[in-house]
Length: 331
Image (cartoon, rainbow, N blue to C red; front, side, top):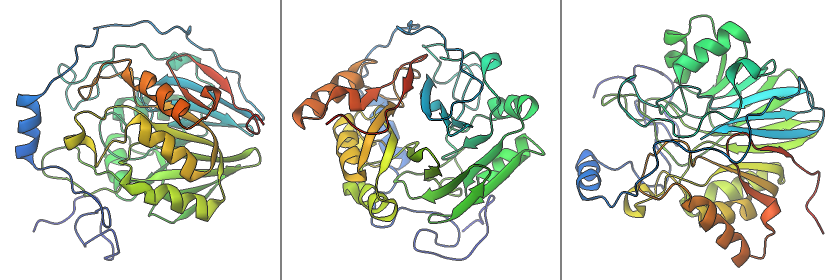
């Protein structure tokens, strides 16, 4: 077996010495299943371009409480307790190893890159192109020089593309002290690859961010995994003011179940994680899978109603949307 090009470390309950894995979870689908999906798919037709109902946001320099602004897909600006945090930042037009082919943005970024406030911290959940965009990271390094926190192995990818970027890595369960916040690296049920020969050689993760204004639980990509990781996060951290949860890229279920939860599972995850509020992401920006562009938002609304959860507690956020998250849920 070829060695790991990104990471060398001891065997653990989720690393076999060469590749990472989800304990008791679903393996990534083999190439034959990729072909089965691609050639037998029932793919909804997305528009080439859409307009958000929200104008491009111009954020304040700092926010002392908690404000979330949607940029698009899994990229959100989280302003909390005076900190400016970006999740999985992507301002590129395509999420692909190539500039001329691959999923293309249909919804412009909800914040112009030049309008960003000073960014302190970047949370980078894993290395898929719709989450780890080296072109955007180069721009952030030049303009803001933020600290990047990411799971094991992803530092090699980032530093090869962006020399000198300030970066800290963690394994599941690690605690990383940063100025103004503590970041916990926690499990997610997913996988990783930048090409055909590096599958599962870098780790994937979720993050818990502790600040004076409360705890945030950010999940970039995940399969529901019987709710195991949500229950564990609640037990360890005691619940959250805000969970940032993926709600899109889930069809067909036979192919996507292990890597992308659907909106019904996202609502269940919010409940299991004991989150007061949730922001839905990973939809309406790049067509990665087969569902219609607006379906995740509609399904989310139905799922919330079925559980008697107010729509205002879990927002399916669109580009430019700004949300001042309350301190506690309505009674």
